[in-house]
Length: 271
Image 1 (spheres, rainbow, N blue to C red):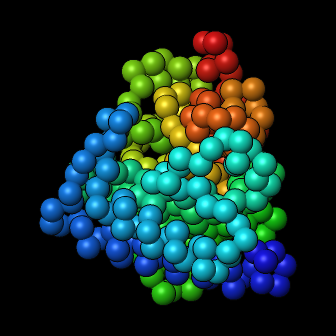
Image 2 (tube, helix red, strand yellow):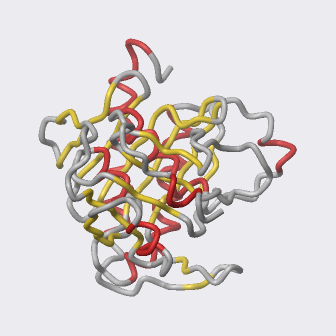
């Protein structure tokens, strides 16, 4: 299951699930989104919930033995999930603020976590009907609609100047000074997991994230980047990991394609 000869069938099924979740999201894109706010003041829409319900139903139908943790169903006690060796980690609508702003920069994220690491991931972009997906040890691909999937890989060596992607909704005023120490760079802002995907397909080189994120924001895209030959690491250079603590908050992390560049030292100097 989800390995070996069944992997391609499982990937096709997951791409289909995420694509149908994307179509569900788009039903709410032009009308009343039914916006409410969670306890942490982050927005929630009818599209978030509709996508969540579809994905939960399909994952439990095809893989009933694998538990599911979704942003919209995260009230699973730590004493239960701390023993999980394998589980699905889902963000049914990553980039809700971008969805509300109708700028197209939102995604559907589905990851399989095994032993604290994302080993398989699907990132679907509803507006462009584009899916990015990858599996550890097997490679990464981009598929637009029903077209043939195309293999993708990170850019090595990095471009000169390096193209840095940053958050559109969570700008960091300190970032510019830290990036100056990397030499010539060009910075582009965008929302959701698209930043990871640009690195995975060789269209960007570096994504430093020193603001708050949750584990469901990053897992699927991390799997794609790593399957495409890139890295997603913490400030000490270790791989970003999952379900090691009760909190879902990620530490600061850094995404890059070219391991020959010293990406981290300007940020380590600031610690």
